[in-house]
Image (cartoon, rainbow, N blue to C red):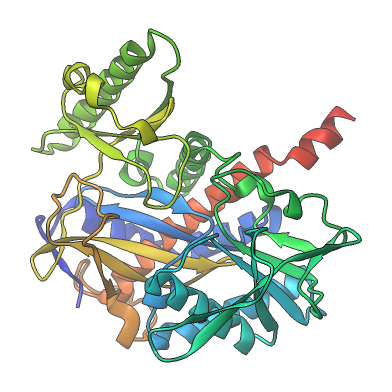
Length: 423
């Protein structure tokens, strides 16, 4: 079943679903042509917000954790996608080195790593785990909740290659977002594929760059479908908080965004109070503060209590409320992709958060997306909002748009491409 959506049954989100389903051949052809020109990121997860009147991505993670929340029914699709991705990059690949987040030892994350190992093993690869921590000099065995274990081994750098003792991979998969900087072990690797590339890490990447790329993608896709791109795009602006005028710049940006949203709400007859989200321009999955502001004047009162982890570079983004419910708790869909394929997803549910708050916080729980027990293809012609496969297809389209935007973003920020242009 589709989780309860607190909106009118004939609201814009159902019109959007109907339009996307009617345009499925054109949509899939458009994606196919885009992927001929742009390389998809190796894997990604995208947080979506379904407001009933718009559906938009609010975060795109290029080093996703949470694969353990995918159901067993979803894993065959993930294995097929992994095969396709590896075949394109290194068809003769035999060994895959997986590098996890340093120091991450919680049971959920270890289960996530175990799921990745399972996916890539079934895709035909020998998978071993390497530790980014240079202080680790011996293999460490970590217990899993199911009684199994993972072994994380010290990395060995030899003749421009990164390996483990007795294990020389052609492909290295990062599952660390590099928020603390780029480790020297990962630089200047010789004839090895490093996925995602180093400039996808948060020491380089900025959310504002991603959402500028997403705005471009949303406009192009909306033109294809003949619709308003605002229905799938969260408007945003970046603010530099350095200097004495930083707070004033933040207020100005928040007021401008709220004015734009009010104008759109009036255009569509939406009877809700707009809000904006203020968050760090530098991400780090679930470990940065997120503020909700409904009036720019409130920012002055918040000035003395702005969280340190917000940083000096921030994004002011249109707040997209979530009107989805799972067991009466606020929920948001999260879509998981590998290569250019949607491989699964879940609802992030939080019983103690509101429709205008960040749900990626302690106390969240996870419920598989409705398609988990129903492998049916989308069903064009069914009443919008009544079909789980149709609703999931719509989520998958928006998730793929965000992944495509990430491809645009990484191409624009590729230091190698910049160096070639300069030469």
